[in-house]
Amino acid sequence: MVIHSYGYAASSEADAGSRNRSRDLLLQNFDLVLKCHHKILSCAEYFFCQPSFASCSWPYVGGDGPLPIGYLLIGWLEGTLVEQCTKCTDNVYLTSFSGSMLSNSTCWTGICRSCRSFISGKGSTHKSFIERIQFIANLRRKYPAQVSEWTEYNGHIFSWGGNGLQPSKKRRLTIKATANPIPFDLLLSELASGVERLNDLPNVELLEFSTGIKLGRGTQISSELYS
Image 1 (cartoon, one colour):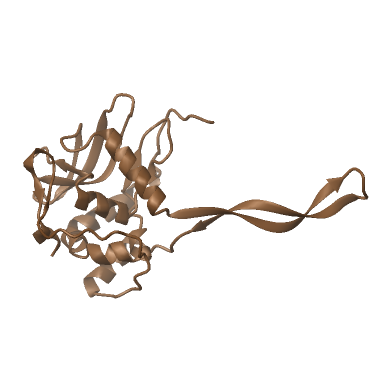
Image 2 (cartoon, helix red, strand yellow; image 1 turned 45 degrees about the horizontal axis):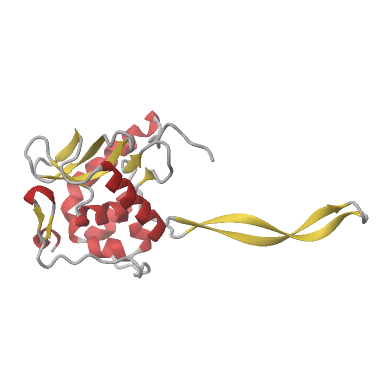
């Protein structure tokens, strides 16, 4: 087993402009994304849409990496990916986080609806870093962006007792994407225009908030935010 002492690294500096543009798009359309959460959580092409700025990172074990918009939405709705704004104390909806499971230290970045800006902070007032690692690991198992399977193919093996190469069935590991996600800007455009796509993610448990969910320290997410 290989143990890496570093976590997932975001894309290169050359992609910084793309990340900033995507962040601006989320700021402008954040209420729309929340309002249309049922559409996103029920359509694989939406669910696995990958904003360039969304990721998580930690060393030593796997499971970190890019975060699809569907993962973010479930984390926002459940309260696992929510922190307190360092400026106005309103909720910050995390788009990225990192840390160490050895020290349980963490830092994060997300969007504050009141400040209408991206806010960064350290530590956690709602969930421990270990809880967030477990949350993402469970999502990757339940809603994987890729699946792998062994497939047979016709090959050859060398036979010492025969005439050299002989036909043989072999196996290779094949990795397949579970969806064909659309770009983030197209997702926002379709949500705004009311495009209807096939609901092809039936296993996603759509989260209903008829009375609101209580989070840590008395904060609450009301169903009015998503209606």
